[in-house]
Image 1 (cartoon, rainbow, N blue to C red):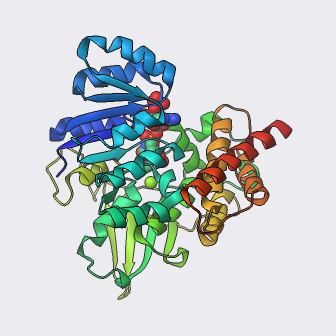
Image 2 (spheres, protein in one colour; image 1 turned 90 degrees about the horizontal axis):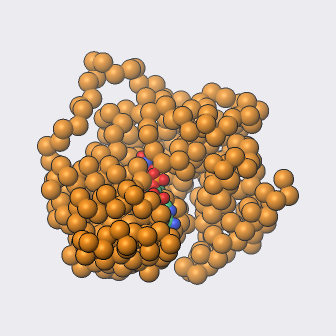
Length: 384
Ligand code: NDP
Ligand code: MG
C-alpha cells in the first residue's frame, strides 16, 4: 500500500479528489504540481506540507515562491520541475492527474524510478502507449489505471491468471449530454451545452471529450495499450446510467463487470491501496433504488471522433499522437469559443490527412507528431 505520493495535477478534478482520499487514508504527500493555480496550490501546500511544489508556469511559480517563503517548501517550475516531482525518492507512488500530453515525460521518469504509477492521464497512453508499456516492463514499475473503465477492467482481471482467456474488453460509455442527436443537430451545440455532463463532474477538457465521444475513442486506445490487445478485442457500449463501469468477456462466455455509483474516489483509492481493499465512507450502490440498466450501440455517424479514434487505433504509429494533439488543440479552441462543436472532428481529420505518419515511432517522433498536429489545427482555425 502507498505510503507517500507525488501528485501531478493536484488542483484539478482528479487531483482534488486524490487529496480527499489521501486525507482519508493518512498517506503522506511528497510533491504537488499544477500549471498556474497559485491560490489553490498554496492552500494545499500549507495543509499537506510537501517537500516540493511545482507550477509549470514560470511566473506563477515565482509568485508562489514568494508566498511560501515562510514555510520553507521548495518551489520548482517548468518541465524540469514536473520531472523532479515525478522522481522524488520519498514518494513510492506518482499519481498522474495532469491533463494532456504534457504528462508524458514525467510519467516516463516515474517509470524509470520504478514508482507505482496511478495513471489518470490517458493522453500519455494514447500518444506513446507502446513505448510507455515497454518501459514499465523493462524497469519493473507498476502502472495502475485510475480511469474508471480501466480500473473496472483491472479489478475484473484480478482472478485471471492467463491473459489469453480474455475474449473482449467492453468499455461502457455514458453517451454524454448529446446522446441521441444527429450530426446536424450537434452543429449548433455551445460550450455551455457541452459542459453539462449527465453523470460525472470532471475537468473541462475531458467533459468536452465526453460530449464528442472522443473520450471513448481515447479510452479504447488506452485499454489496447494497457492490456496489450488488438482493436478487435476492445469495444464500447453506451450505458447511460454509469453504474456498470466496464466489463471483461472471457473465452468461456463469462462476463465480469465492476459496478458502483459514479465516484472517481473508488478507482483512485484502489490504485493507492492495491492489492488491498480498505473500508471507505463512499455511498454504496443500492440495486433496489438505481435506475434500470440499459445498453446500446454508439452512433459513429453522429459522433465522428469515435470513428476517427478507431481508425487511428487500427493504424497505430504516430496517428494516435496526431489525433490526440489535434484534439487537444481543437478542444482548447472550442472552450475559448473560437470554433463550433463539429469543427472538432473536422480539424482532427484534417491534421491526420495533412501530416505524414511514422510507424514504430521514437519518443522524439511522437513529440514531433504532437507539435505538427497542434500547428495544423492553429493554421486551419485561422482559415475558418
Ligand atoms: P482538470 O482540468 O480538472 O485538471 C488538470 C490538472 O492538470 C490541473 O491541476 C492543472 O493545473 C494541471 N495542468 C494543466 N496543464 C498543465 C501544464 N501545462 N503543466 C502542468 N500541469 C498542468 O483535469 P481532470 O482532473 O479532469 O483530468 C486529469 C486527467 O485525468 C486527464 O487526462 C483526464 O482525461 C483524466 N481523467 C479524468 C477523470 C475525471 O473524472 N476528471 C476521469 C478519468 C480520467 P491548473 O489548475 O494550474 O491549470
Ligand atoms: Mg473514463
